[in-house]
Length: 113
Image 1 (cartoon, rainbow, N blue to C red):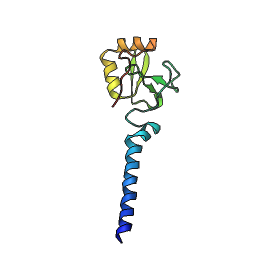
Image 2 (image 1 turned 30 degrees about the horizontal axis):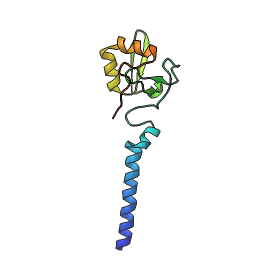
Image 3 (image 1 turned 90 degrees about the vertical axis):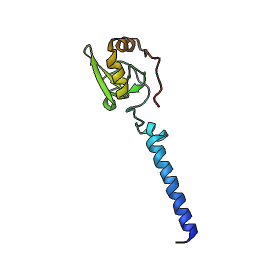
Image 4 (image 1 turned 120 degrees about the horizontal axis):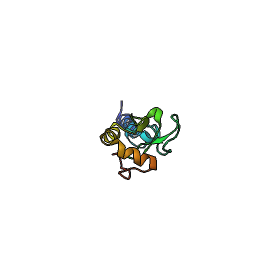
């Protein structure tokens, strides 16, 4: 192989690796439902079990079928975007459940990094 062919092949491999990383961890992760949050953004609290709901801790929209975690409090199932939000909910479920009924997040929402 000559030098130009090797440069071209290296360039293609570099762009391919960049594309793969962006699809896995960048913008593509949100489109494909990744980034550690299963489900999309938006939705309403108290929607049907098949429809979107809101994480009572951070306020992020969560599809119950794809939720990262769930917890039951007073006979009602709450769905979470991550296990850390579920763990926070389980430390004080009454506080988060009351805020969820009012359609608010006790933290005012937080960003996941």
